[in-house]
View 1 (cartoon, rainbow, N blue to C red):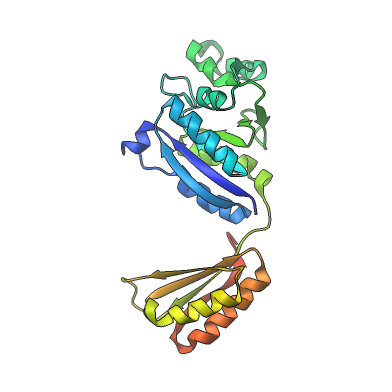
View 2: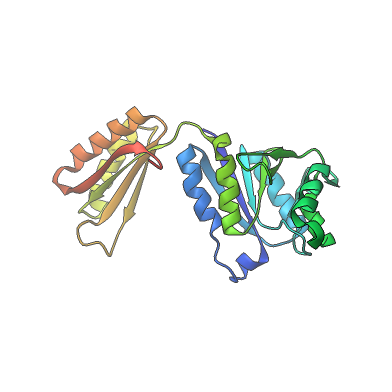
Length: 247
C-alpha cells in the first residue's frame, strides 16, 4: 500500500489567521484512492524548515504533498526550499514563463514571473487542465495553498495515485469500551490484517461506542466484521457493511 505525507506550509495557518482546510480534504481523497496517509506536519514560511521537513518526508513515504508558499511574494519560499532540499538550482521554465506572460498579457507585473520558477529538472504533471501543471520534484508534489486551487489541482491529477481502495465497515455498540474489550481482542487476534478502532461517544442517544474495521483485503474485513457482530450480539445497535472507502 503506497504511503504519503503532507506538509502544510504557512505562517497564516500556524498563527490562526486562516483555518487549515487542505489536509482535511486530502485525508479523504487519499483514503478513497487507497493511499495510506502516515504523517501531516504544519510548518512556517521558513526556507530551512521547509527544506528539512520535505526531505525527511520524501525519504520516508512514497508520496509527499505540500500546500502553500507558492506565488510571487516575499513569503512564497516553498519552491526555493524544495530546490535546496534536493540540491538543485531554481530555474525559470520557458514553457511556464510563456504561459504566465500569455495569461497576464499587458497587465503582467514582473513578480508574477516567479510562478514560472521551478527546481531544475522538476516534472510538470498535467491532468485535464493543460494550462497550469503541478510541479513535482522526485516524489514531492507542490500544490497551492488557497483551498479552492489546492482541491482543483489535486483532483486534476489524483488518478495518478489510484490503487486498490481500503475496505471499511462500522459497528455501533450500546456498551462501554471496557465491556467489549475482550471481543475486540479476539477479533484482532483472528484477523491481524484488519485495523480495528474503538471510539467512545458521549452525546449519542442510541450507542456508546463506534467500532471501525478497515483493511486492504475485502474478504478479511468482511470476516472480521461478521465475527465482531456475532460476538457482540444484541449489544449491536446498527452496522455499516464493508465497502470501499469513498464509495
